[in-house]
Image (cartoon, rainbow, N blue to C red; front, top):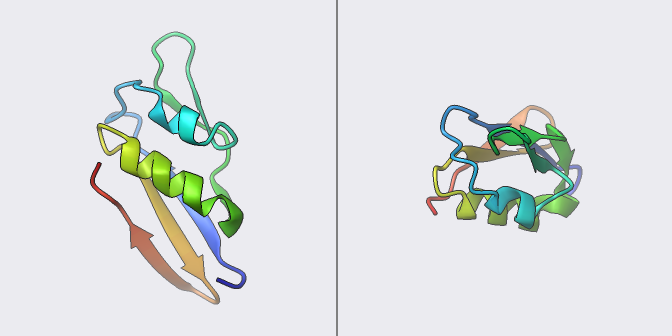
Length: 83
């Protein structure tokens, strides 16, 4: 995938604080100290993090994570995997 970018979306209202996302990709996700709800550290990244982002999306028990892969000029593919 040349020049692909990945946008990461999280839904804090769905998040239950399980922490699977942080274990899958600590470069992108963290958790709030008070309640464990997901904190997005990076909203967009290159495709080098795609495997760990897909894993985080797949492992999220509340399906609070969605990744969107943007390819080239204005084209995008939304991907949400049930976990």
